[in-house]
Amino acid sequence: SYSEGMKARLGFAVAEHAGRDLLVLDEVQEALDHEFRERVAKRAEAVRASGGIVLAAGHDHPLLATFCDRALWLREGHVEADGGFDEVRHAYLGVHA
Image: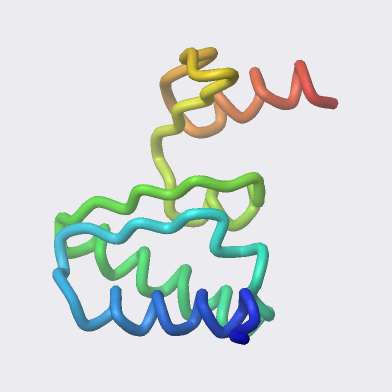
């Protein structure tokens, strides 16, 4: 059986060689070491620099802050906040601090 880290690396390798316009990351930080996290952040920056979109779901605010301008906070299927990353992060942390 493959570990979560191996699955994340495989999925990311496929994403790196697929389209250049969209990168989808789902809780990718959960299974990554520091070196691979940097690789993910660099790839996300490259997608954004080329005019593409990075869609990321996660709780690692420092990692997400490196490549997210906008955030959407969902709770129980409802939108709690939608706006700039820092604005939404502060709203989220105000409830979960």
